[in-house]
Length: 483
Image (tube, rainbow, N blue to C red; front, side):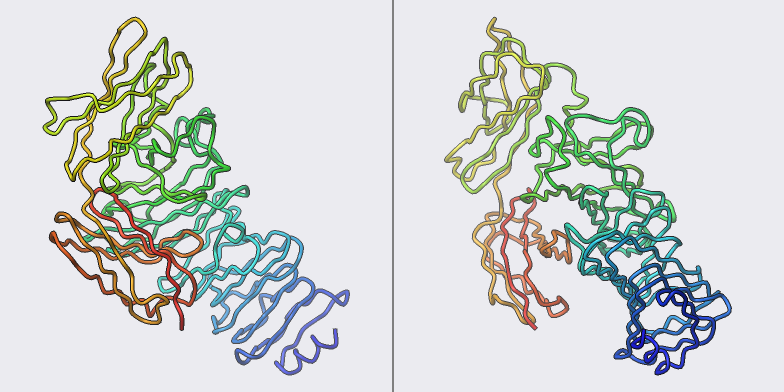
């Protein structure tokens, strides 16, 4: 207690101390500058009649409660660093400048709505929103979020962040079981708006009600809304770990589904998931918001339906398909066509035969010689019955050899790449937690090109850069950013 008393005298604070642990400020507590520190081992309460200004470092090992009607924001930092459960509460007109979660054990929980004006930092541990909102000021940022350091958002409380046209924000939220962040990016001409995100720990047949899905899905729901409805054209990127994948879920055939107009909208095509535990899928063109889930179209396909997708990789096309069930199926013939009309057999794959579950298959069409092909799957049963899948087209990937130099990067770097045909090229910069930090895009003609990137604003660390063409062909580079 001697250390605390000395600090209080230095800061000219008038406090009442009970049980040699808890601290209540009934007078004036002024933490002068960024080198001045107060550490409270017990509960801290700032009385409604008191005055608290934090321009320094305030460490709280138990509950932090501010009852002052309007606290000066200051430029200080509150750090929750206890080893047990901690609650944080403040009045609506008393935002925090910096809040840091540095808990080696125990859970921090909001006991009131909270606004952050500068930085929310995760060093260790998680912060539960419970039933209260966390609002990030327009210029505020969240740092340090990852697999074990994030906002648990399974109550009615939401994480609020403003996004402008051509802007992008990561929402580092999850359930108590897993980290499931979502990144929202707005297209050109979108209206600036505040977006709200929380989670449900399951996928429901009716969006938020009804039975929960027990297969062919990722076991979580992203609840997304905007403060002012309309005016948005958004791209969403959802992330999940393998531990949340339910029986039958296949990342090759994933869909980012949106519950709207009393039904799940699964989109027009399958999305092959990216990454390697965690995984991500991205879908663009959302103009309204409600529950979102990563699931499979097979969850609603009628019995016997064939589902096919494909992807080009250099001089090969990768074809994947699935059946929702099979009865006496003999084999599958992969048929290819250059014009979409005249098909020839490119190869065969032996079928499972009989199955009441989703079965998945793949085939590699080699030496395509830079041609775009149409494909369909012919299912042949033991009795000779034939069933065809829909027809898809796989275009030749535009993106070829690419290099990044210099690496490590101090301020600027250059990506050199070659295109086999005209294509839009997008560069995504992703941090080690899998969050999208920056997106740069431009359309290029056939030939050799260079994309110059200014990365001076990035903190030092390790990053991935994904270079993607029109049809989703991706080349990934790892680079180091130095100061």
